[in-house]
Length: 262
Image (tube, rainbow, N blue to C red):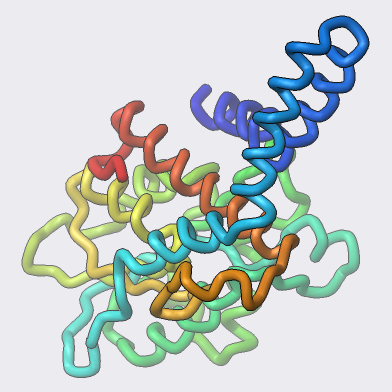
């Protein structure tokens, strides 16, 4: 129920959709009540400035990425690696009959390097799919083919392909993970997603060393020079992604799926 409700509510109330909905509602009230439509337009203008004109989303995204940094594991003994799926578009891959990558591909490429670096580590890939419809080619199968092309021995990898969201990634993977404090497990996922992932792991009493990948922004952020480069589309995209993750943090905390709220 949580999965379906979250998808429906996000589709209706994502920031960009709200701008469009408020515009339509404002046009409707313009015909029947001028006071209300002016108020709606004022709200829409404020949201437009925050979402499109200012780099608010970029800042929120940077706050997420700045939570964890890449750990120094050069001389570490790693017992296991959990890789959260992503990086390959299952639907587009089936449609065009060739591997179509997305902007999370570093989860795959960096994890391939780690698998080779730690030949004795237990490897777990948690894929599944986060959409209503079932893809005709499972992400785990595509991931397996990708790793083979990267020269990785896929016989070492356990593929979990039932999960639909971050919480289920850990819930369904837990039985494969040695839940002891003396074991060192790496968690590989996108930097902006790591905070929510670590919150879920903590809630399920799983201990990980965060290994963030797929960084989208610089290490530092400065509001002072935002006007030097104004990219409306990027501002909007960053806000969409960042708000999805921040809302996810809050929702997971209050539904007792994470021990980190913000």
